[in-house]
Amino acid sequence: MVLDEVWRGLEGVDALSGPQGGPLRRTVKLILDPLVIRPVQYPSCGGAVLTADGATLLAARVYAHADALRATAAWFTLLKQARRRLRITEGTAQDLYFQRCFELAATRGHPDPHRDRVRAEAVLREIHGVAAGRTTQALKDHLTDPARAALLDDLLTTAWGRRPPPPAVPVGHSPQLRQLLDCAVASRTDTDTRAGRRLLDLLAAANAGTHTGIELWHAATRDAATDLARYRARELGLTTHSVPRRPEVGDSASTATLGLPFDRTVHERVFTVLQVSTERAELPPIPDLVTTEIARSCAPWALLGESLRVTAAAGVELALGLAPIAPPDPLRSRPDTGVSAAHRLVNGRWQREAYVLQARRLAVHPLPGDGNPLTAIAAELRTPWRPYLRRLWVRLHGRDVRELPVTEPDELWDLLDGVARSVVLDHRTRVRKALSAQAAREPDTAEPRAV
Image 1 (cartoon, one colour):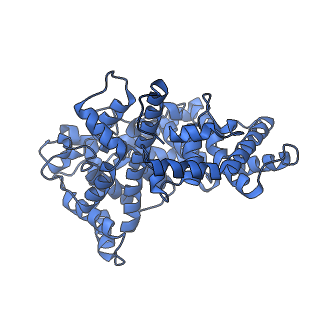
Image 2: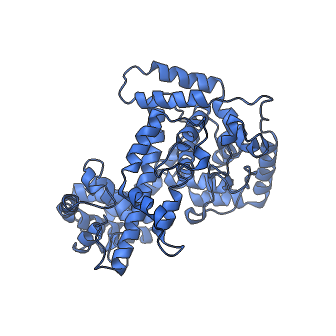
């Protein structure tokens, strides 16, 4: 509500606003949160429900950037006009241009519609020129050729049939992975990270990530009493099936219809990589991206790098101990799950979130209606490992495509903790939207002030 009220008081920002006059979701995500409000630097502006001082500070920061925001909107309008003239259809304009427009506003001020027309076209060519032929349309053309699609489908069948079998004797790595979590947390303040680095190397050499990844294919048929029974892909939120199935090649992709990580087609997996890449010229050519993705999709954890598989396994150990709402779910309450310093750190931060406190109240006094967004978020907080592991896999997949291993414990912690923060921020945004909608329906009774 606070942000919405402040935004509606600004003039000249229509290009960054929704039909009702409030800021677009991407405006908040790409411009306001990271570049204007900066909740990490100003924590009082970061909650879903603000104190009076926090609301005042947030309003002051937005008003202080009002001129830059108006210039950003003007630059965005100019770039969209140039985009139409150049007949560019690749990518989403808001995702590609919002932050660049804010940069132009900060460095050049308000654009001149005539004098800066050439500059706008140059900016677009710079943004889209880095694709070097690695476009989503080129991907679609490559995969929809009938003869090539048949060959790739055969390649998928062969690769899936050659997956490594599970070891004759199950191998458990949970104690070492929990120890790795503790080393990773300690690396934030400890300058001597040799112990953590040595443990990470030992787990990679022991193929701990490979073993846990193989279990995802067979856990449904293994003894549920074993330590490895925790690696069940459906319960972890990575697939809708009891065990992962062979992916399809696919002939289309859209961010609005993506399935769970292990249910995505090869087309969808490469498509997401192209969508988020700002330097596509650094990626392999489309044919190489596709054939490598086929091999990756049939590998343990659907990842090729062993250090990334170990990171995924460590992520499971962390995720199954997440408990924003107590008591924890039975899936996480196994005696051997263990609680590390990493769990205490992430859970402590999460449990202090205002929306988590609201979710606890909803657990006792649910709101009427199955479709209430706050009730849905409260339900999701009872299985927090699912959104966490889905987001972790996406980040590890991106690193795997770029051949970026995890070699240091602090690097591992940055990944795991960054995903936790991302999930919290996503929930916070959804709660903010729900509270704003409620306030619009009941303006006289809404006491909490949502961001």
